[in-house]
Length: 148
Image (cartoon, rainbow, N blue to C red; front, side, top):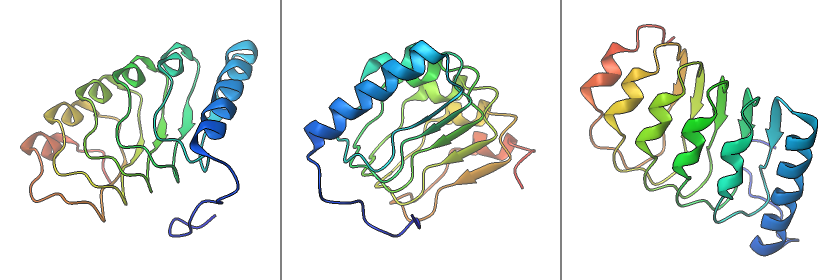
């Protein structure tokens, strides 16, 4: 699905949450390294997501999220975090603890500010922020020398 396409309307956010819980349980059981919770019309995320320590790729795009839990900062193995096409107004400072992260997609949200802790993501090579409500960026982002 292209980034500008809308999610299907067939399921309710409640059904999407139930599906997300099933996928999280399966990922826990299988010690999965990838998890796709995109296009489920999610309005919130279960904190259990923070228990999936082996994840390297987490796809949460094309939902209706307005916030993400600070527990995402516990996913230290993450290299890619896709949060584009949501309704995020802020992201937790704990995302700055994801030292292995190379790609962070926050585009097409409602972000008005970013935590300075994102400047600690020294491995980051790709940071997508377009189509938000940002009027300034933390000066610490200037320390991200690996960005391409």
